[in-house]
Image (cartoon, rainbow, N blue to C red):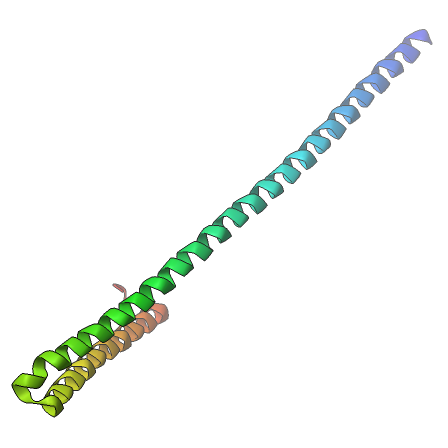
Length: 126
């Protein structure tokens, strides 16, 4: 009988150590998960901070580009006015800008169509 008791004591000790190991593993997993979540939150905060600054600089660049284009239009009007008159300069600049805008619209429409064809599977080389 003493052999059976020793054998069960060994099994109980082994089960206790196995259960303890599983508990320690679960605790380590929870700690690791908590650390990973905290890291990803910090990473997302860093990226959002950078995105804000990128957006601010992008908007500022677009505003400055707009004013640059307005200065170009005014410069063209002033430069062409002595050559073809103020109304001729106005017509030339407006027609030139409309032509450029039309080319941009045509380019956008063709890209949208090719994208739709690619999404439908009709165009393999988008």
